[in-house]
Amino acid sequence: MVTHSVNAAAHADRVMFIKDGVVFHQLYRGKSDDQELYQKITDTLSMLRRGGER
Image (cartoon, rainbow, N blue to C red; front, side, top):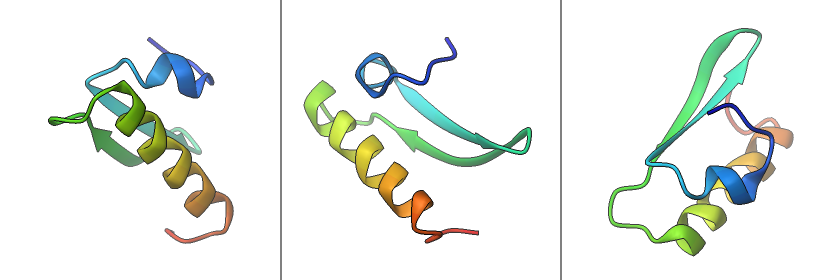
């Protein structure tokens, strides 16, 4: 599934962040529940917006 919805992505087993057509970053659910994965996604998006990973 492709989505821009953090809520929808928080139900996945793996979340991939795409930049310029290339997988830029990935998160794996592991033992995280939906709420924990949601927080990881929002933290990652904040970090990426600040330019924390290049």
